[in-house]
Image (cartoon, rainbow, N blue to C red; front, top):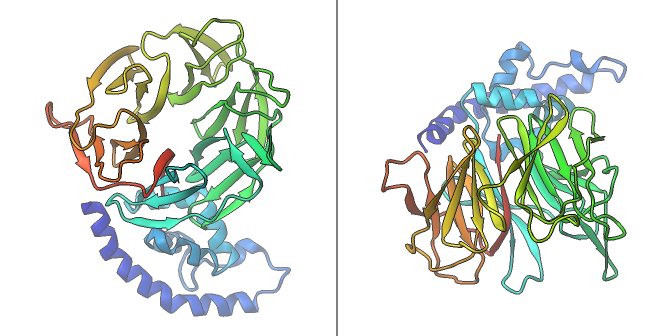
Length: 381
């Protein structure tokens, strides 16, 4: 990408500047008394903080973990939302895809990281805690959240309330506040900088209608108005500042739900709309404020929902690159990626560009995980 290449050229100068200043920074920190205020320590000696923040924002993403080890002020800045804003204003945001993969036997899974060119950047260290299945995954403030799910201990699975966060800048896992209600097989999504979890199964296997919202600024989960009916096996997404909950099942209805529950964070209430599109969805993603789904009964078609007018349209998935009938979605550079869930080693990833001219939306891509894709998230920093 041109912007990425420009970033590299600018980064070279910023790294040379930082190299000459790190030793001075360490010397100043060694002279500061423990009682001195944390904020009084300069980010970079001899530079105003606004200039220093800009300099740090120019450093390549792969160097963030090393930067976080220099001092507490650097680490605190890198963890903050302000750092994301500085990176955005400097035009230095890098987009990486985090893919949870497994072998064809499905015995082990791991997170691997791919950049926009398809290069594997790293494999994440294992998430702490017991083995998990049926957990939720989303991203907020450039951090990956692995939420609740079934904890498997000594071969016994039970719904759990624990939440773990992966900081992509510092390359480390940490534990966040627990949910108020343990759950698995639920829906989750980020809306307006907060994370919502909806429905699922509880500890006793009961279906849940409870809904919680997480505020990353306070590290706190809060119960909000519940759904009108219990719901599990559903999925959620944020569209136009609202939370949409699709599909799944309910103990109060027969078969898969044909209604969509919509939560407005401003009014703090739910409304319901008829689902005129998908019912049994196997994978979904939001690209540029538009929802893309694939149904179990139509595995070679994309179902596309426009929240502005509530309309649906369907697009055929070409056979080019793969005759697979099962996919998982990924998103990079504004394009939808289709990863096969079958064990074929010769397949090519399909790419759909919603902004391409008619007839050229579909291409093949070099971006390909090493194993079968279970799910993926995109993190921009």
